[in-house]
Amino acid sequence: MYDDGDGPGAAATRLTGRPASGERPLSGALTDVGLDDGRAVMVKRGEEPDETRAEAAGLRWLAAAGAVRVPAVHGHDDRWLVTDLVPRGRPGRDTALGLGGALAALHASGAPAFGSAPPGGPREAYIGRAPMRNVEGADWPEWYAEHRVLPYLRRAVDDGTIGAGETPVIERLCERLPGLAGPAEPPARLHGDLWNGNVLWGADGHAWLIDPAAHGGHRETDLAMLRLFGCPHLDEVLRGYERSAPLADGWADRIGLHQMFPLLVHAVLFGRGYAEQALSTAKAALER
Image (cartoon, rainbow, N blue to C red):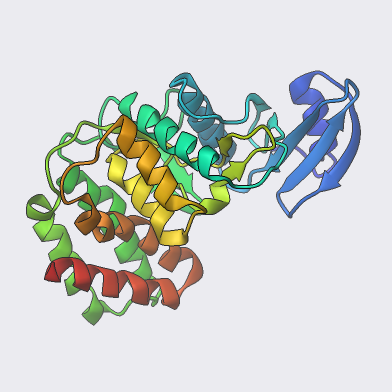
């Protein structure tokens, strides 16, 4: 780690090779830094071991698919990540259609296995501030239960967010996943943390994706997360997706299965409200 004197401007200078000309804090972790050549970059401060490495590897893996727009990575170290700054625009139906097609192409670019980390990315990664282990598996229902649902259920119980007597409904859902998961699909290249806050509607008329928790997974998981937290013109996103890569029959009935992962992550990070939503979602999925 660098000392406290190594702020975002100094990090931008070191990692881009251009002197910083100004700083504009955007949040506790994000700073818009101007460079002496007129460009602006986003400087993000990492708080956890390997956080910046995981995000940089994820952005590069998504970019390598040639499908979605992501900010270019200028450099990172164990504390700082420097990327392009995306000028903001407004959501629009045409942009949403384009995002859907781009997501379909991203997912189709594939991954070596469920749970694969991006090349150069750590096995011990993050989704938001929650740890996320990238452990590979060949069978999606088994892998999803073991590495994307049950670890967060156990942590929520340990934290007292979910009572031990409440866990059977989620455990039963995990047991029944093989029969509920729908047709087998190959591992998709996922953004992994695809809520509306990580979709930037660019001034260039395109949607940009930031802050990935990228890994190999089931393509319906990204789409379920967009629905969970809301997304402007979501119907157009889905229309654009299905024009390029139709979803398997019954996908809408499986949305709750795929939402268990982000709901339990949010229960761990933000508390009881999300725990209650996870429990009710599991119950509804079992009753379908």
